[in-house]
Image (cartoon, rainbow, N blue to C red; front, side, top):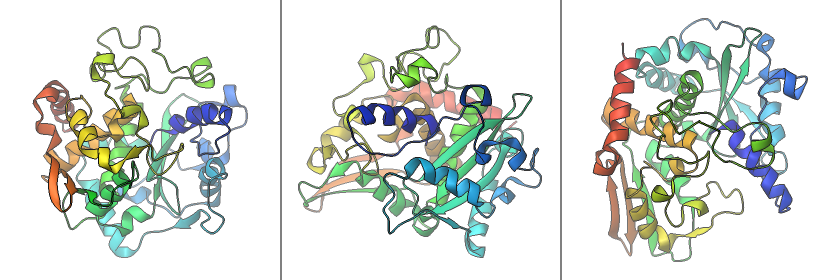
Length: 352
């Protein structure tokens, strides 16, 4: 989940007097003054030591308070944010998922991840924040909802997907099968690692900043997508949350997750047509259609699941128990061959 994505949405929704969540955008000390303790280099061991899976640490109060502070207006009084530390079996699963990453993700790129923390009752599934040291090097902290360790991966992803739709007709249902035997941790972890890869190597231009963010004018940065600098998103995105007109589809702008931002805005009876439109778009999932950064992170997670781990990815929409729409292995779609080719080349480089 992109950290500045919620910050910009909050500004718009405040104008509409809607109380909602926000992900912070603490980019540097010059602009924002004294940074919170959670985004100060001196709060962590830098450079980090040990293996990447050893970055799973007890969640310090200052990290918990940092993430809770942005969601304070929507945290239910009976469900405060609480620190959570994985069990022995959960730590073993975390280690196994980390070890499946390509070598460069565990090495040069992952070496900047200073902490992986779990939060009970967290709104959303995950959030990666970054900060800079005095030399301008970026480092990352990752916060994950502890529920991803408690739910089977397919059930977690299904539950997340269902938050997009209001149940206007209980005869419809949505299910996603990404394989059994693992918790939802590995999939959201790979999604968040996709963000770290993006932040580290500039696969996308990053979040709009300054007047663009403050005014919620998420237009194209001058020169950002009119050249070959960002081939993954070139021609597909006009701005941070604005796809090229030929790739946008009806209903995409109404896709919201977790009941945030006034959602759900779509009805479950609309699901078959929404997913048909998704399949004709260049986006791998509905979540990937939220912004160009989520676009890449979703491709990374899906690629890890399907191509690296050889697990299924099957979405079905049922009506009265009968399948009325199905997406089976979205990476096999002909209309996204060039984007999958980009991922093939990327993973070859990450495996060097």
